[in-house]
Image 1 (cartoon, one colour):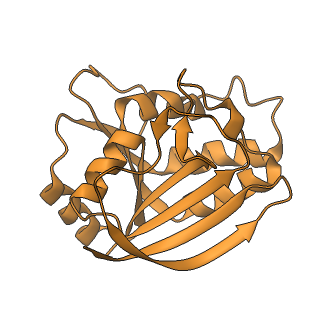
Image 2: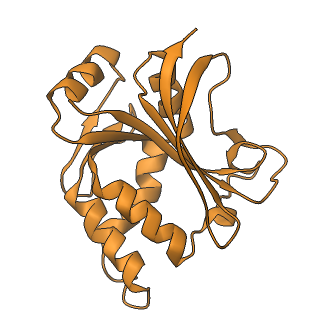
Length: 188
């Protein structure tokens, strides 16, 4: 059985994006990128909303990777090797391999996917992540907290959801980013 892991880069004040939709403040250096590579290596299926999928699909092509570091190029292969499910009512087709579209987020279907998966699953994006949290589907939460205040924008964690968490791991990177890994103990 796979665990569903919500993973995100987040500002110190709790946002995935600033008010203008930018997240350039969370571009990882090689040390942080290597962390994400290791994390993603254990993921068999990634669940995305349309906007997150559109941001991530850049990893499907090699044309821009030639000038990148080894750790960045390595991530492209890891991303390509995972299955991807995109939840969207507007996306007409996917342009990446190992990807399918689901028109609605069905909590029971995600539960079945977890039960039948040999590897862990990830959920990315604020809206889809919030739905997964609200339906009690998230087993673990991995956040990389960046030393920046953006003053507003898209919250990383859902409002109106109370969960008790257990700290499983933490780490400080050389660039000041803090990794926090929590397991969900219970919803209250």
